[in-house]
Image 1 (cartoon, rainbow, N blue to C red):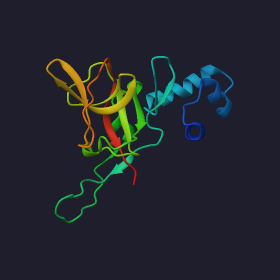
Image 2: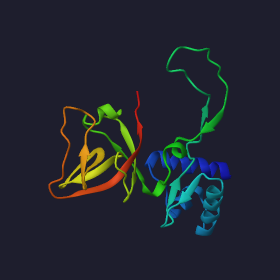
Image 3: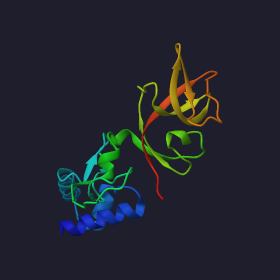
Image 4: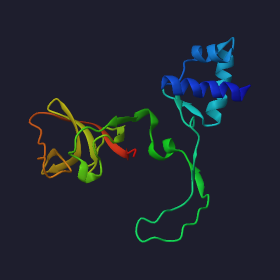
Length: 188
């Protein structure tokens, strides 16, 4: 019965692109009390399938399972391939350090192409109040949002694109850093 309820939870997540509330879990599992749902959720948390944020809302952890990691592939000169299962990995665990502060943005434009970030890519970003010079940041500069390298000259911060056809952005009034880019995801 547990596996059947887990499968329904997974189906709900895939359909709605969000985790269900306790009331919704009651509806699709047939549980009659929230304490039964609490027990089910506690088992999921213990197994690392979900976790809870500061407000107690469910956060998916390993709903999609793990993918086999077969080893290395040579990107230089060809070498004999040896397919050997080395481990398994979850992309969530690999890409996300702080789930509550992490979100994904779709890239528009080509100002960061020389940093390997192209239009249509997805960037995994993490909210921060402590960005470091040299990081790629999501910033609000003079009321407009952009993604650029954070740079500093003397005591003044500015934003630098990774494409020579664009000029650096020196804030006239205000520069607020919202997040730092942690990963780029590209689908071919």
